[in-house]
Each structure stands twice: as structure tokens, then as C-alpha cells.
Length: 316
Image 1 (cartoon, rainbow, N blue to C red):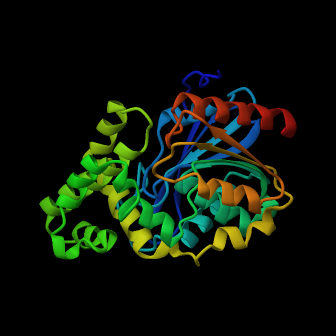
Image 2: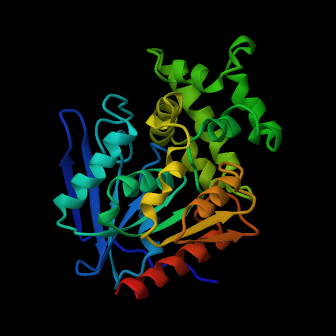
């Protein structure tokens, strides 16, 4: 089973002002002359983490990480203005041009897979390949599964705490109810809602309980960004048309795609990965039999490192 590559530090860090509001954090690590790869983090609002550099052979890849609008080291924190899928696609293209990259491999999981697909469908000529994990198609049923009815039947104990934040009469639309609290002026209510939202998602993210992940989800800085930005995106249906990613899959027919998905993913059930696999003629699907949603579960990690090693050979 493949392990992550050793920890490395960035050789360059950048700030990029993408509009009058948002200033993005970007970093580069690995080999400056290597194969360009963009790590597209999840959430939306999840931010980057140093461990994400370690999915790639640092001798072969020029590894680019960035924090999407409103999260991580990007500024302003948890900002919802000028924050939509199209804004993020534009940011990715600005980053590519800013760094002088002609084509890059996209590596994204969960919302990162969503955004990678949306970018690749708009700029297919700029994408040398796709490695996608924990596929999230951002359709109404996919959002409903996690935040209304679905995962709630698998984790009724954790769901009880999540729904306890909302009065009974508002529970028919949990995303809207949380959105109202996450955008309210009451800071205490806003932070309580953010922590409950982030912890609910954290509890659903691994096959085996992972306290380190839950501790990260409970961090106020992390929780506020991920809860506010996710609620903002999901109340707006991801700023995409229904089934847009599947309907436009034909635009990716020339792009080799590796899909990795845990059999027991409770955040993004596996039918989403299978639907994408069937729609993409140049894709392969790796179902990890003993894994959930997290990229750092052993079987998921193994398949992702195998995929980056495989692309390192084919793109060399």
C-alpha cells in the first residue's frame, strides 16, 4: 500500500488580488521544472493543509495549492460577496496565467472534484488530466442527502445534535435554516451554527471515527469558513444548472480521468462517482472497498498516490 510522500515546504508563496474584494493565497512546492499540478481543495471553504502536498512525488511535480475565496489564508475570511463557482473558475485561470503554466493536472476531492470538473469543462485545452476523489455532483439530491435526509439515517446520533440547533418548524429546509444563522449579526449564534455544521460533516467523513479530523472541524476559523461558504453555495444550488457536470461531460472526452471513491462514502454516495464514470469515455473508476469520504483513509490515499505516480509517468 502506498504512503504519502514526505512532508515538504513551499519554495514560493504568492498573494493574488483577483478583484476589488478577494486576495488569494497560492503556494508552490516540489520541482519548479516538474509537471504542473493544481490541488483543488474541498468544501467549498475547506482551505488547504500542508499534508496535501504529499500526494505528489516532489521530484516530478510542480505542486500548486491555493485557498479559494474566503477560506484558509485567503482574505477576507468567510466572505460571501463575489463568491460563486464562476468566480472560482476565473480564479483558477488567473492563477494558471500568473504562474506561467500552459497545462496542468487537476487533483480535486469532494467539492474540489466538482470545481475541477467545472473548470475543465470551461477550459479543456488547459487540462492535461484529472484525478478526482469523492465525487460530488452538487445536484439537489446530493445536497439533500447530506443536509436533509440520507446520511441522517446512518448517523442518527450525530444528526440529532445537528438538527437540535434548528427549531422544529424550520427543519423542513435545514440548509436555509442554517444559512440564516450563519449570516446573522449574532456572533454567538453564528459560531454555534458553524461548529455544529462543520462537526456534522466531519462525523460523516470517515469510515472509522477520527478525532484529529473532528478537532480540525471544531476549530472556529475553519468551521466558520466552511459552514458559511458551503451554506452560501448550497442555497444557491452550487451556482450551476441541475446535472450540469454530467450533461457537459462530453467536453472532457479527450482528457484522461482517474476517479477514486470509497464504497461507504456517506458524504457523497458512490452513485455520483458511477454516474460520472459512465458519462466520461476516457475515465477509470477505482472503488475502495473499505473507505468512506476522506482522502487520508488508507485505501483512498493508496489509490490517489498510485494515480499521481501513474500520471507522472504518462505526462513525463
